[in-house]
Amino acid sequence: MITILCSGSRGDFQPYIALAQQLKKLGKEVRIVGGRSFEDFIKGYGIGFYPLSVDYQTGDIDPKLLQAAQSSDSPLKMLLTFNKMKKYIMGLTEEMYYACEGSELIIYHPGATIGYFAGEMLGIPTILATPFPMHKTKTTGNMSRDF
Image (cartoon, rainbow, N blue to C red; front, top):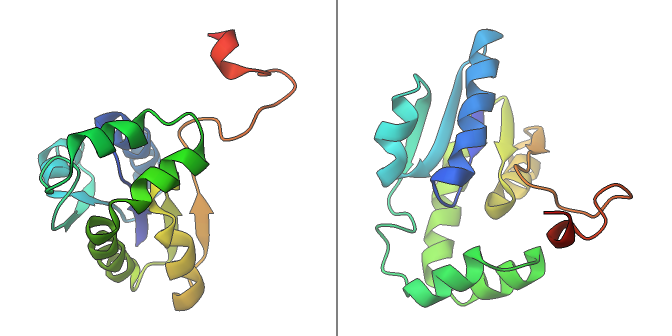
């Protein structure tokens, strides 16, 4: 079983659904771990699903904090904002860890870095699969200027 850990909005999940579909074509059993509100969306593509008890839509999270995290222009700012939502994130982190048990591979979204640590602790290979650029390159330069 390949476990894909994802967090965020629908736009965060869509690239991982495409990845999961390709892995299935290769004969791999795959599932996506995410908040319950995404269950029908993910299963609608024939992808296995492991539900987390809450997500950003169903959790008791201050919408202003969530907006600040989603609109951060750097991973560090995003993490600092998420730090203010510790209680919510700690519960999800534990659930994501348990979702990884028994996997042959863990693929994780940058917002679900527990995947790396779970893999290390469980002896499972991990891959960070980011659906957006994480670093500037010679060709991208200042990304905000390029768009």
